[in-house]
Amino acid sequence: MTTTQRHAIFREKALKHYTQGRKKDVLPSFGSISAGFFAWLLLGFLIATALVAWYGQVPIFLSGSGIVLGNNNQAVSSANGANALAFFSPDQASQLSAGDTVRVQFENSNTHIDSTIAQVLPGTTDLTSALARYGLKLGASTASGQQVAVALIALGSDASTQGYTGSTIVVEVNVGTQSLFSALTGIKIS
Image (cartoon, rainbow, N blue to C red):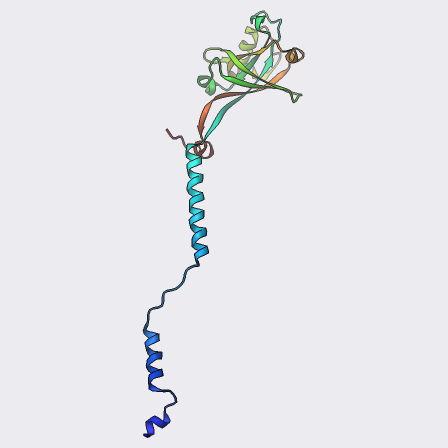
């Protein structure tokens, strides 16, 4: 035995194996199979949500307020029963048309009925003129010069509307649908 072999603590084969192991490229492990499956599942849900938002349709409502005219108003034919005047902002006038479905809720009550718009006055008018046309007086108010779009709503001859003559109403008119994406973001898509 030589002196160098006696003084070596490690065998030559073990040193060679150790140095070869250090020269190999080791790639890091970024995740397990379950993490990869979860990532693909999450991507699938995101794509499904995007498709629903893009192609799903939600109704568009215009809100307004008004007053119940009743059966005895001379300016409106009372053959159909009670009627109501609904007032909308002037920029909504172009979206209103006769035959649109309307949900009418009577203020100071939880009662509501579904009806249709019987007539839309052309253009816009001030609130005082609209009320005067149907025989109603506004009184001393600061809203006399306010421009509004006016729609006449046929409430029908239902007995539940007769007790509400002269009361105020809240109106929601269904004027169409739009995609859920447009409703959430405000971006119009065609």
